[in-house]
Length: 110
Length: 189
Image 1 (cartoon, rainbow over the protein chains, first blue to last red):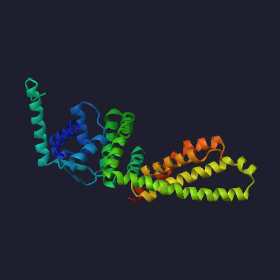
Image 2: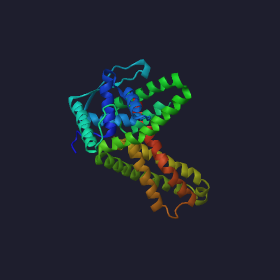
Image 3: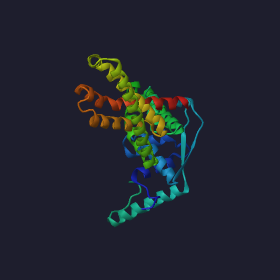
């Protein structure tokens, strides 16, 4: 197992960071992951995962200016790196290979 | 109030001020959205649930990131604080025994108990101050060590209720000291 290998929740967070684009920050990522996994994820789970992904070099982060809607607090914004993109493709290839061995037809929409 | 309490707890786990700010900002933002759409009561319940579910994960992450040095510092500081408090409490006990009769001391045992609890709070604060990392973990270690000491060393020297109550309340007292230190860290930011 390499340091770039990612688990299911990490993959969900990484995909959401990618799909949110410029609007990827803690709360929006939490909402998107909760929606995709169909369960209310905690902010702690999302932040610890984002931190782990950043440590692995799969996402990068920066802090925005404070906003009034957050009581004058900043946002931490996230973006996927090239290594993150490779990790997603690697995970997709692995899942495809697993399903092909299982003798079932792979469907990208599932 | 809940975000403020969460802020102090996170500071007590040595979560840096920038990370605390963004996490609490996210919670405040989403709570306001829920309050506008689903009502304030739902929003408050959601916030409490988020805080309770997030704490174990963030605690685990902080302790894992710090590794053995954080735990060693916390336990070491707890031990030094406990030893300091033992010296101070022994000295004050000697003064009481010299100044009052044994009958008077038994009558005012509750007063002595309050003083011991006060030492517990000061010990927790001292442990948090000495460790410089994870104040709440340091004060917890001080509280646990104090309870262990009470169980091992108090046999017969004090009334049974006194020893039992100390064993129950020393950890909360030490954690109160750690809480005071963490709150100070938040206000110093």
